[in-house]
Amino acid sequence: MKNLAIARRYAKALLLIGKEDGQTETYRQELDGVAALMAKEKQLADTIANPLYKATERKQVLEQVVGKLSLSKVMSAFVMLLFEKGRLVFIGNINEFYNVLADELKGVARASLVSATELTSETVDKIRSSLSKRTGKEIVLDVQYDAGLIGGIVTRIGDLVLDGSIKTQLLNMRESLKRGERA
Figure 1 (cartoon, rainbow, N blue to C red):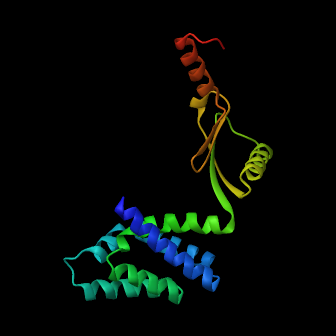
Figure 2 (cartoon, rainbow, N blue to C red; figure 1 turned 45 degrees about the vertical axis):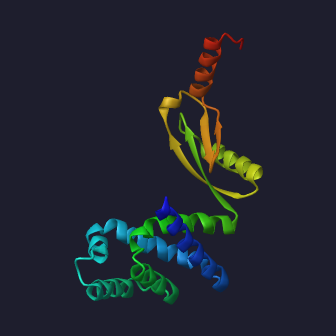
Figure 3 (tube, one colour; figure 1 turned 135 degrees about the vertical axis):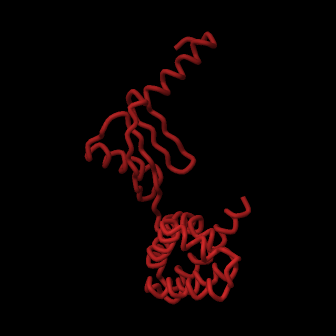
């Protein structure tokens, strides 16, 4: 839990810098790139974080990597700060929090839509539009399919879950029958 608080704090700090200089989207792309590289090249990330190697040597390796990535001055300094503070291992979490905060700043909400069957693009657009009206935000929809739902859809926007699946309706009906309620 403490690690998430640390990641959130660094993400907020970077977002504040991005708001000041108008580069929030640039920093998002650069941070995505660095986080993806560290996730993909596990050996590199482990080497940079390994205290068995001299800090100066690890720093040189990181500086070379940052140089090859052609990052902005702010992002280069941010990555080096994370290294200096021993927080580079949290870059994946920092990236996640940064994306959420940058989306909030832009008025964008991310939602997931799970359907029992494949939906037409028209239907997905109507659902996106409806969710956008309900939340007052632009919706980025992640559409997935799960035949286990039997029918209907389940939508999640943050903590809000809109469950219109037949599976859930059947489960609710069964619970009502167990309790002796009338449908």
